[in-house]
Length: 183
Image (tube, rainbow, N blue to C red):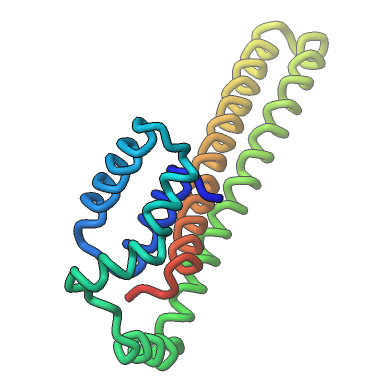
């Protein structure tokens, strides 16, 4: 048994799958129609069953509406074009990913180096107090704070850049896996 929201979600998916341009109008119409049936005393499942199901509605809409169904020939041409041009665009995409990973790696190294140098000079400033004097220890303490600040700054760059790369990859793979390859 399907309720109203499940019915409308399935209908919307199928309408968009078959390329019905005014699918929102159909969704709104059937939503209001089901609301009227529910207000007249029917349960949500009974109202959906009285309409006839998603497939029946979809067949009625497709028979009334001029729907452009994607041609297999165009999709086949796109796949052949992508496969044939892979020796050109494949290495370019691989190089861009390698560059992005190199930037992430360099940001990790810079952040760790600045933090380690900042901690080392911070600890060294306590030794400088006794060996050389307070003025030099204060200078070294200031330098350690600058280095620690740079380490934190590079860590924030790392978080932002790696987050952007992750979101880009997620959106690309989501697009490719849900709809196939779009050209």
